[in-house]
Length: 75
Image (tube, rainbow, N blue to C red; front, side, top):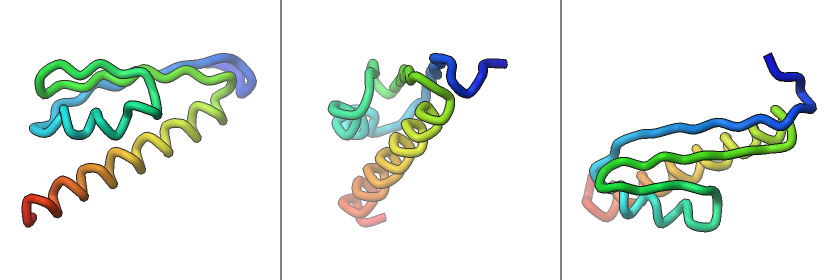
């Protein structure tokens, strides 16, 4: 298990019907690949604490983007 002060990273992949639109919200946030309906995000940080903060920011951004997309569709 890495120590709190070690460089660490994560990679997450998911599928979404509006992957292209969601990926637009990631352009300034992280490295990602969007291929059709699949998004893969790779994030690296200087510590686990920093990586956790990056994770939280990314998830909040994705949730907000999905909610905005749903609102524009009347859901």
